[in-house]
Length: 447
Image (cartoon, rainbow, N blue to C red):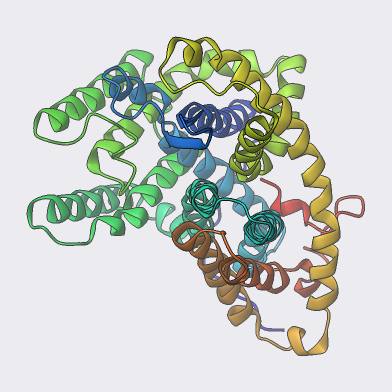
């Protein structure tokens, strides 16, 4: 059977997995959930209808706060660390590029298919039953927006073998090239009025992932703590300069599209994380902390995928039951934010644990289809490339068109389902397709 291979230099010694990096990844996604929960503004209007808006936007204190709560660069840095570690472990066992990429797509496409199909169906049924079309459209928009991350993450992790090949030969050149590309695209978009800002979805997030590669290889391990803190200060100083030159001080705005300001924030997070790493390693190595990290990390992606649908469901139930929904930024609204966040996590965390188990029947069904002779005759290279393209396409449809009716839900779920089939371990060589106690998701694909 045809396989995909990239000629490589012998990989460096593969280190043990870092509990600190696992904790950073999990906490980053949980921080995003907190931020999204706080930005959902819903209240009962004068006519008794449900009104919605983006809360916190426009608040004078919010822009400075985003310098702390904008953790997506940090997530991609930690994700790069883990992704390169997983790829090197697979290489050491004789796996191919196709094995790795298929495993990564599989891990992300299966839960996304379930979420998109379930939520799309629920919203379409709500519309048929007479739900307010404006509220359905609003829910569809809010649920689809966080999926930008999934589309970018699938693409970035699919490029890990190729970016690893470059990293192992010219690490500094790759970092400099990506940083220069991000700068050129941002300047062209900002000052030349060229509609190319979203090209930085490639440059910025691959740069953050590459910083994770650098951290894994300990290329700055010889730096003193003082030097790392100086790197943090320089990055923040340049970020302040960017804001003075006209970039937005709101790091949420700088996310869409990704800008040089976001790159500098990511660089500051990179240096700060490495400066704090010795202390963080001691904390996360404690058995109690390690157990919590493992448990939370195992369901973090499911929690991310499902948090907005569940938040929308909570709001709908509260409205139907006549429970208080104070207007955003009022005294009552602020007083209820802690109970609101507690309720969100009380629902999201157990649901994420349950839905992670519910992914397995869908994965087994994908395996059964993948085993059909017609599917298995597709060449490995074509199968893997198609899986990546379809997974990105499915999430992009949900992001741009929403999930508010049957047609858009199908246009999103069908490519994601096809990606789940094409990336099935039923296509892999037995030595690589290791199963988890009957779980249809291969072990090497775990996030």
